[in-house]
Image 1 (cartoon, rainbow, N blue to C red):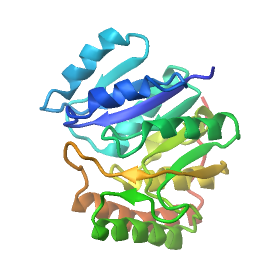
Image 2 (cartoon, rainbow, N blue to C red; image 1 turned 135 degrees about the vertical axis):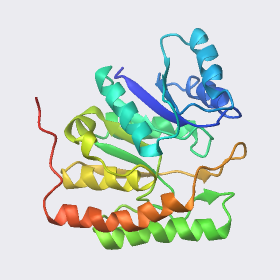
Image 3 (cartoon, rainbow, N blue to C red; image 1 turned 120 degrees about the vertical axis):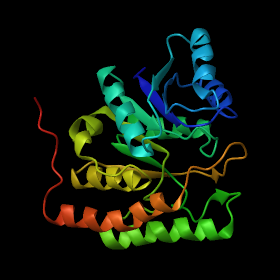
Length: 247
């Protein structure tokens, strides 16, 4: 079995973290988990550390000094995954908005169907979002349409945060040059993978908004996504997106 790692960034996820970890570990595919923890004041890290005694070979934690953004959390996790020789690396939220069972479908796309990037897509077969107010659904849907218009990407769910990557993709992307830290990070990573010639596929999922804990979305994150895609297009047109130089 090829090694798969699920990266879960956390900040104040005490209501969800134990359940999401236990659920991932019940799947038929034996994923490991890396929690990237941003010094949650609610004790999230203590819960993870307690569970590490129960799952010593499969559960890991990286603790950071404070909130540094979603993008930097994943970049930190990606580098850790490469250092520890994982073949397939997955992004997933802690709050059950992504169904852990769908990890196996993303894994199959990478392992069996030879995709390089597999996106758990809310919009590839319509609008598959549960428990969001209509305003947020429309904002998200049309944000993806805007990104497609500006960047030329054909991906329907450009801001998706439920994504699987092969080791080869993350070794090829120069992770130190990924600029965005909020949800624009998700757009930048997909855009970069496409520009570097990788096969990106979308797998339909149903996204269910969190029932416990608080959303981390805010206006600054949204603004970064709106204006960031313009700079992405410029960088792409100028040929500035290049593979990492191998040492």
